[in-house]
Amino acid sequence: MNKYVVEGRNRLSGEITVQGAKNSALPILAASILPESESEIHNCPNLSDVAAALRILEYLGCKTHVNGNVVTVRSDCMTRHDIPDQLMREMRSSILFLGAILTKFSEARLSLPGGCELGPRPIDLHLMGLEQLGASITEDHGYINCSIPGGRLTGGTVALSFPSVGATENIMIAATLAKGETTITNCACEPEIVDLANYLNACGAKISGAGESVITITGVEKLHGATHTVIPDRIVAATYLCAAAITQGEVLLHDIKPSLLGGILPMIEKAGCVIQKDSDSIYLKNNGRLSGFKKIRTMPYPGFPTDAQSPIMALSCVSAGTTMFIENIFENRYKHVAELLRFGADIKVEGRVAVVEGVSHLTSASVHCTDLRGGAALMIAALCAEGRSEIKEIHHVERGYEDIAAGLQKLGANIRRFSDVVAV
Image (cartoon, rainbow, N blue to C red; front, side):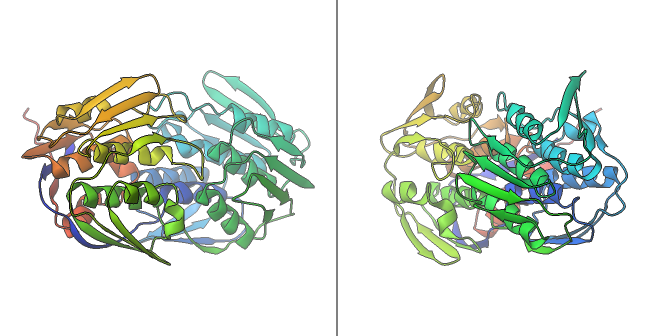
C-alpha cells in the first residue's frame, strides 16, 4: 500500500507552478468525444482521475495519446455507447460522459458513478435536464438507460433547483448539438464551467453566459476539434498556500490567476498572512501564528469552495482562537476530522457544523486518507506536526494532486512516497 512519510516542522519556502485543474480537465475530456476531428488538450494534469477518464474514452473506441501534460483525443472512431460498472466506479465525474455519449449516439447506457464517499451526490438534476431536452431515461439494476426518440435533442429551458456544477456541465455539453436554443437557469458559475464553455466554443459551439446564472446554448449541426489549455487548479493552489502558512513559510505560486481564489485569499490574509498578487502569480508569507478564521460557510461559487474547506481546517487547527465551519454542499465532508484528531487537534462536529479550537502544536501520527481533499488536509497537518507521520491510502490524494510529494519537497518539506513491504 502506497503511503507518504512526513518529518514535520520544516519551514516551506520557494516557488512552484500550479498544475492544470482536475475539475476542468475531466468535463473537457468527456466533451472531446463530440467533435468530428482531433482535439489537443494542454495543461492536462497527470492524475489517476484523468487516467480513468482516458480509460473510458479508449473503451468507447476513441484514440488517445498522452505526451507530458498534453492529451490528444480522436473520437471519429468511437464505436460504443455504454460504460461498464468497473470504469464508472473509478470516479464520480464519470457521469459527465452521459450527455456527450447520448448526443453522439442518441442512446447511452451507464452504471451509477463511484468516487469519494462524500455522501449523496444525486444525479437527478443531470437526468431531469436531459429529459427536458427530449431524452427518455429508465433505470435498471444500477444502470441508466438513455435514448432520444427523435434522434436529436431539442432545445428548451432547464431550471436547476440547485446550481450543480456537474448538471450544468452535462446539460451544456448535450445542448451544443441540440435543435434550437437551450437556456439553463440557476447555473453553477465556477471557473471550470467557463473553461468547458471556452473549449466547446473553440470547437464551434455557440454558448454564451458561462460563469453567470443563466447560460444560453444555440445548437449547431456539428463540432470540430480544437486546441485548448486547461485553467490552473485553484484548490491545488489553496493547498500549497495552506502548507506554507502552517509551517510559517513563504511561497510564490506561478501560473495561477488570483481571481480564481477570490473566496479564499481574503480569509487567509485576514488570519494574518501577507499575500501579494500579480496577474498570474500569488505570493504568501507567514511569520507567526495565525488567528482563527471565525466562521467559514461553504457555498456555491463565488462563495467559499467546499473543496478548500479541508485544507483550511488543517490550518485552523493551529491558529489561535475558534473557527466554525458550516458545510452546505456535502453532508459527509468531515470524515477527515477523526484523523486530524490523531494529530492532537481539537475539533467537535455536530451535523454540518464543525468547531475547531486552535492548539499550540500538533504531534505526529499514523493516519488514513478518507477522501481527496481530506487527504490533503492530513498532509498539511503532518507538515507542522512534531515528529514522523505516516499517511496511508494516498490513492485518494493522487486523484487530484499531480505528484504533490515532489512539489512539497521542492519547497523544503521532508516527505517521501513509497510502498509498504507486505510480509507473506
